[in-house]
Image (cartoon, rainbow, N blue to C red; front, top):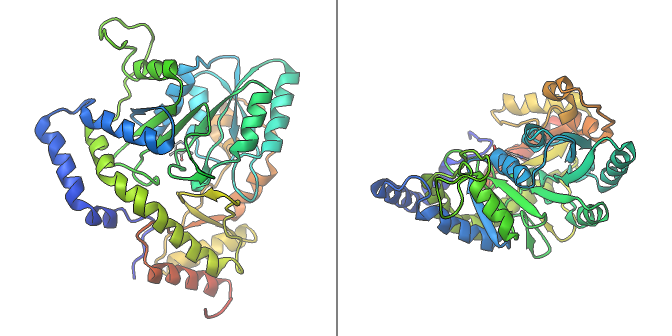
Length: 382
Ligand SMILES: *Cc1c(COP(=O)(O)O)cnc(C)c1O
């Protein structure tokens, strides 16, 4: 049995007819840039997420940069970012000229720690050198961050919240969807993300009409609505290709009604059989994860690396997400940021291991991974 880390080909085989038809329609119409599929997709996703506007763009990274540009974030501004995440959550703010303030995460959820966040904000206020402006909570591995606490903190210090839902699309807290918890939310359609296209893509969600117009203008070189040749702001070119919108449209119902449910079944199966052996992911009461990754924690780095090698020897791929905190990245050190202490990141980078996971994994495949993990940890037969 050859297990893949995330198999995208089974999904294609499952809905091949819809996808092929959708792509062919775009090709025969030649409407490659901002064709009708783009606004159709934006309408559907805005409704699903529960925000008034969805503005698609060329990637999740661009979605972050565009949002910060839309607020005019730049030099002298402080942007609060979790230390344990993908680099784009932090580098987007640096691209805008802002200063990032890194915040430790919770060991249990891997998401930004509200207590550490408030400390970082008060410290920044006391220092008086930067203007605290934005919090970028990340819904890491598919699990929404503690947006209830984050909202309270944001209100207390008059900060904006930019929810980085690149890995979290489809997740929920109560009856609310990921990408709706911030003043602005973003997602990524990178192929391996929970809702992926066949290339790069991203989207921005907001309830603010004026902000939505600003983003639409920024993603199209600063064009204004009715006059393509009067540009009022400096923007850049970041649109979602019609082809990618068509692929996402063809995938959407399947994602919404099937994949999000199936991937949770796969994750539940892992948890059932691994919870006594390793530390399995914590999903707080009332939360739904969209499971971008299934990440377990081992005792220490030696055990983690050993398990990774043992799995590989049995042809089972696994990944270390993430081997470094943002504060340990060369680019961050070069930028001379005065980094603080991140004890939970330090623990997680040594102990984390992400196992193969996708909605189409069979019970047999999951069972095979479980068996090899137990074998390595000498838990014997299951
Ligand atoms: C993937 C990712 C991004 C960037 O998305 P791209 O579409 O790859 O540019 C941003 N933030 C997080 C947390 C991500 O995982």
